[in-house]
Image (cartoon, rainbow, N blue to C red; front, side):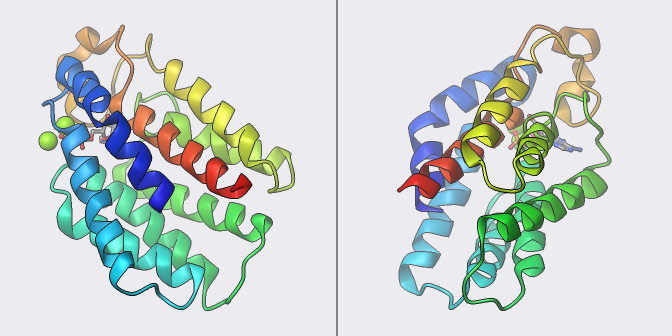
Length: 193
Ligand code: ADP
Ligand code: MG
Ligand code: MG
């Protein structure tokens, strides 16, 4: 979560720039506000288990981020945390499985499918890469997420604010897919730390 908050803070301006092309110019601010609140909350008291850390972080995102991304990322983390249960230690494989559960919950909540030009276009390839490596290779997940984010450029948005632009959403990288790739990169970074 610290690596995620650092990455979001570092790239917030870029996220906002992307959102100014096909949205309402607040994605960097939304993400920064949310993840700084998560950092603060976890700085006060670290929950006892990995699952509780994710659930606490997810709740914080939902309560501090007004945009679409707050409830969506919040749901991802809460559901992933719930899937980990009360285990005191979790393996990479267990975390990979929990992330899949969380990402499926995002798809259900937002109603988006692959190719709709959303955060899922980075998240789905990431969990696929994890599954292909038996839930082990977070570096491969990072590469897949970054590639997925880049591949949103030629897509037309079918969900969220960018979809209001219709064909004019084509030719821009999706802000949420970009932040999703950042979060997966932070996870890979934490794995090697
Ligand atoms: P808002 O659009 O409310 O201002 P943000 O700018 O913080 O919220 O987040 C926008 C991002 O949220 C988009 O770039 C997209 O990736 C993601 N998003 C929007 N709607 C959906 C959805 N229904 N399913 C998945 N992701 C979505
Ligand atoms: Mg926005
Ligand atoms: Mg907004």
